[in-house]
Amino acid sequence: QVQLVEFGGGLVQAGGSLRLSCAASARTFTNYAMGWFRQAPGKEREFVAVVNWSGGSTYYADSVKCRFTISRDNAKNTVYLQMNSLKPEDTAVYYCAARRGAYSYTKENDYDYWGQGTQVTVSS
Image (cartoon, rainbow, N blue to C red):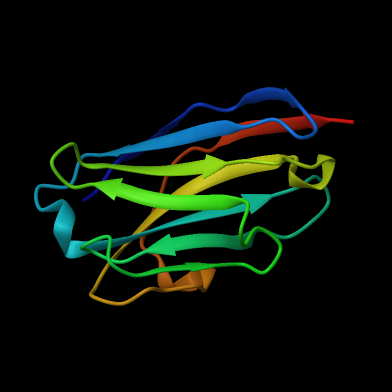
């Protein structure tokens, strides 16, 4: 069983930055690929970014590529999402997710464990 807790959401103006953190309770954090997803009001949850077990491989949704950076610190059992050049359309609840495995998984149903979510609101 893995518990995930997200931190760092909030209200920011367009063009600003936020960094989300997700702390994992996994005994062996490196067994897990870690992903970020988001859900805007009235929309389905969508993939944002994923990092593999070592941090050496990352993959992004086209909508956030070159603006967001996912990383992990395996010594701290934590994954991060640095969000720059934020846009109002980035407004959503952001979820951290974990999946045992060696690859970079991009589908929601690939993941076994989810955090409770953190709200990110970008004002225009």
